[in-house]
Length: 159
Image (spheres, rainbow, N blue to C red):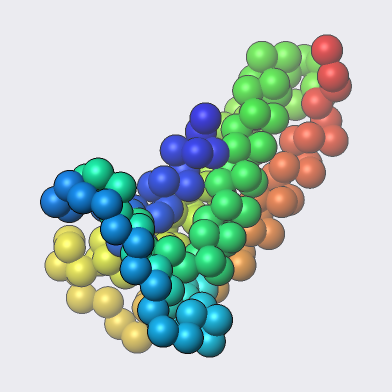
């Protein structure tokens, strides 16, 4: 459930999921295969379709959907392992804070997708160096999510 929530928030953060006037529509761009691989930003690709079902609007970008699904799966797995570690830290050879620490990379991934937008909304003057940092947050996040999943998962003993 948390993975699904993260996935929906990820798409909403990219502004690929939103609400609009109610209707039913499916529109596909011309030459979708070529456009699906066109990058519009670091780790963001151009949408190739618009799907409207009722008031829900979804811009479909297969690579963004795939990336969001991978991140959501890692966040969901980290949360599941964190709950197991939190419930039985003495059996897992972990301190009770290890489960909470394993969830921090999930927050980093959310900041990676939406950080520049947050800076604009808040009105923070960002230097070019700070903005270039955002392109590295997503790969660092994936490595951190995998690392914490393996670290905490290797210490959790099944019940």
